[in-house]
Image (cartoon, rainbow, N blue to C red; front, side):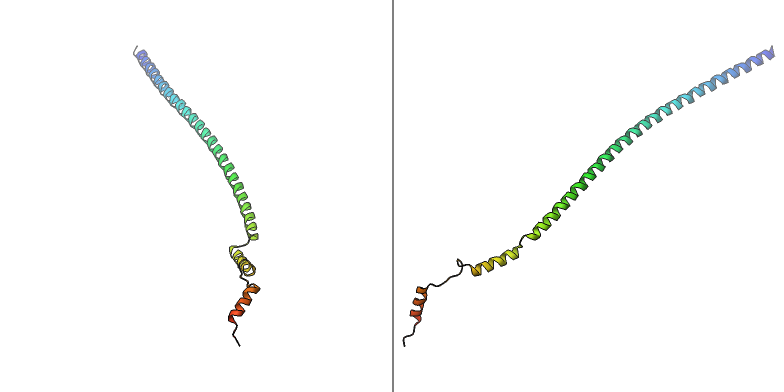
Length: 128
């Protein structure tokens, strides 16, 4: 009987240890499941973040490309304007032309008529 008690005690201890190990295994499995769930959530978040980042990057690239095109158009327009302004007269050139025009313009110059010259000649004339 003592032998049966020992066997019974050993069996009880083995069952207790087995139950304890099963409980610990379930606990580890639950933590593993929770970690896998969190990892899946993180992976989903990272994938969504990566997708949004790629979309924003594509938008920025398109915006930069559009800005480059606009800058090229502005540069071309500026070059055209520069070429056109080279064809226009400068302010100093216009002033010079105005001075030349004033020199030959009868509206600006004062001419004496024949009568005025004869009158002037008569007034200046010295009696001899």
